[in-house]
Image 1 (cartoon, helix red, strand yellow):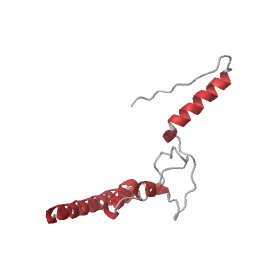
Image 2: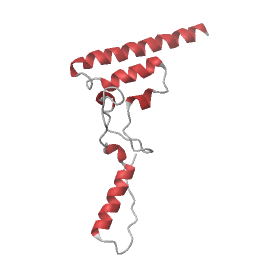
Image 3: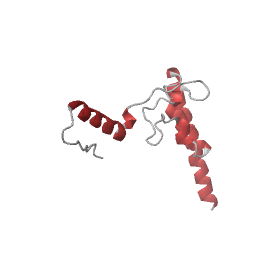
Image 4: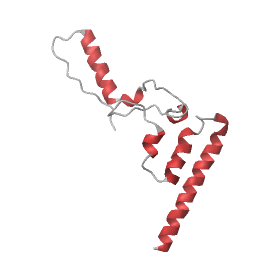
Length: 119
């Protein structure tokens, strides 16, 4: 992946106009680098699920864990949830969260193997 930006600068543009165009194009193309401040609360937007430094290129809102796992089955989504929050929700439980993620992945693997063997 190349990280290039092409900017058309009209002839006669002053320095501030050029800087503004460059900044706007960089922000548009690399918006994941800048995370707008989000309102964190324990129910709707807990900090440990909004910690990813990425924003949606369509709506500009921070990408949250639920945005990623919302369409997954329970085991896969829960595994990602535990990976996402590992070290974020409670740094003392980082390893525990990763073990929980592993448990859900192992459970999903066993389920898929059972399905395969039954067919």
